[in-house]
Image (tube, rainbow, N blue to C red; front, side, top):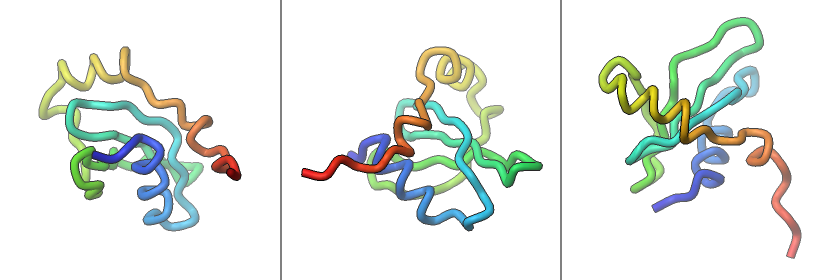
Amino acid sequence: MITVTMAYRKLKNKLPNNLKIIDGFEINDAFIFSVTNGENEYPFYSVSKRDGSIGGYNPMQNIPEYMNAIKNRAIDIESLDKPLPIK
C-alpha cells in the first residue's frame, strides 16, 4: 500500500513539466488527480493504492463513487506540494 503523498510525488515525477496537478480525491483502490497545463484540463490520472501503478480514471464508470469521493474524500494538494521535513 502506498500513501497519498507517495502517489502524488510518483505522478508528479512522471508528468511533463508543463502539466500541474490541481486537485484530487480518494476512492477505495486509488488516488485520483486532475491535471492542467494552465489552459486546458486533462483527464483524471489514477495511482493505485496497492502497487503505485499509474493509469486513467473515468468517473462515468461509477458515478456514485465519484460523487461521494469529490464531496467527502478530497485531497489537499497544497499540503502535498510542500517539501519533506529534514530529519
